[in-house]
Amino acid sequence: MYAVISPQDIQLPPGTVVRIPGTWHDYCQLRDSRGDGSIPRIKYRNGEILLMSPLLHHGREASILGDIVEVLLDSKTRNYEAFTPITMEIPQEGGIEPD
Picture 1 (cartoon, rainbow, N blue to C red):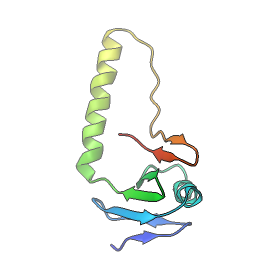
Picture 2: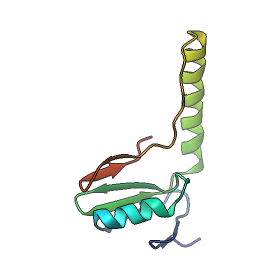
Picture 3: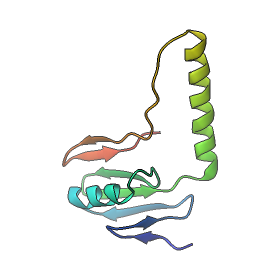
């Protein structure tokens, strides 16, 4: 599979990392082109856009960690809500999707 990056579509093979120069507007277009998807991960800082397509084991490890936290919260009868993915932004300065 080849990497495809355009304002309308992003397709990256698992394990791919791409760094490209870009503006905040470019970042927002790429982020929005994914719709409700969370892949690829997109980061913006200082005129640079970083795209990363995680490997399959990355999602498994995150899922296991989430399951552990869920069990701990349930054992303490704590109320909680899960919100994934989440994008944190400081408009015009930076945006990141933490794991």
